[in-house]
Length: 138
Image: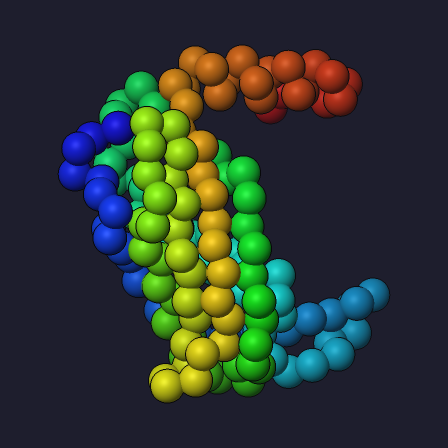
């Protein structure tokens, strides 16, 4: 990992809530707000944005944990700003604090952990998972 990644490194992602982001079960939209799983997805993306520029060519990151508290709804059409900030870091792990806001309203908070591995190690892990599941590599 490059020494440019430090505690306090951060990234911001801004998204607009669309109908496609609404929670739906069996094809029926139940609320016209950003779903928790979409909120989690965008928080993961923001955390990845913290890590990605600092990886060496022979490294890759993989998410290993996410925790979010979804505190308030964000209606379709609203703008969400997601911020991820490095709060823990060692040679193989990055932990980011997460916050999503709609203006002054805090929509969600949380934490995401990524493991940093050599690409060859991660490729081996993925190959073993594919073989174990009986799935065919594409």
